[in-house]
Image (cartoon, rainbow, N blue to C red; front, side):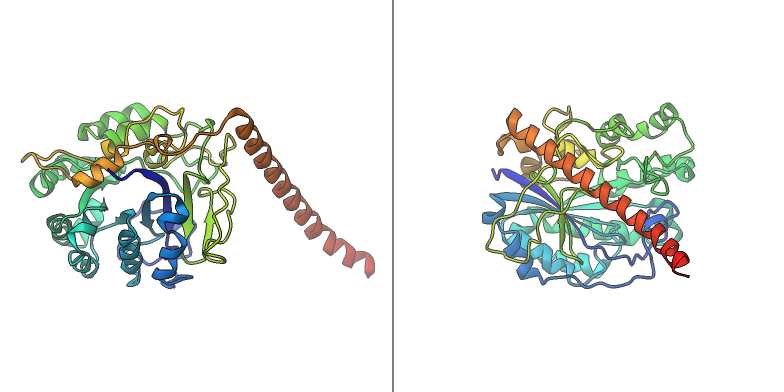
Length: 375
């Protein structure tokens, strides 16, 4: 069995999407008129920068986007190179870009066995646009070719009356209920609360009928600040493909440019106990793989897999085994002294950033005052 060493979340930073879901964070954070689909480097350079040798072993790569991940034609070149390097991959997609799914289905089964498609099930939007048939046809296409799939429902208040209809359709098409995530309100970035008018208890009761371990775990930690020692920046990193920026996490500090000197080692620096997020809204990935070893979390395969009515499973044996691991099994944990140094360095960087922010504010205020005095 391949042992997991690190998790790299690759954000393409591309904005176009063929759906217009009312709850999408694009409406709140991203200028949707930005339709650039290019990346900083080509796929082969990316592979060299994130080789198994440089990363210390086999890693998990999650490819996602601001919009629909599979719209950029070049994206699958990156996926293939990463798979051929021996890593495992996950693609976050709305499963409607048929050309991309057709191309994926031509990959060798040896590569597809290391690939999972996280198919975001935007039920109402798919139904409105007549894309439900295309969605499930594409899910079947890659699953039949040898890839893993997981179907994930985005819960929002508007589709509550359609829950029975959604359950029936998914049982017919993919042999099981979809997993259910927890939607966040991106219009409130300082707190990122649940996107719902329901109370937590009502929310749990309504969406709990899907019997989704993903939903149960994510809701249990949602809106709760994460203060355990976090290895994001070492065991997990965020790569922004368009700018080439590699950082500890979504709001973490920058590591070094991974493409500047590909032959040099990467500079791993974890966040420690100073997580800058209001809560770990992606705990279903970061914490299930064990970015915070002290956090009580299920394994990643448990929040992604389903056993179907015919006895088959959504995950291939290879993905199931790889996802049933924790980082601490294959990485050395830091001792007390090293953790203390990490937290001290993070505190200094935080203070330095705050100091620079104050200086910028002072300069902004001082500039017009200086002009007034000069006159």
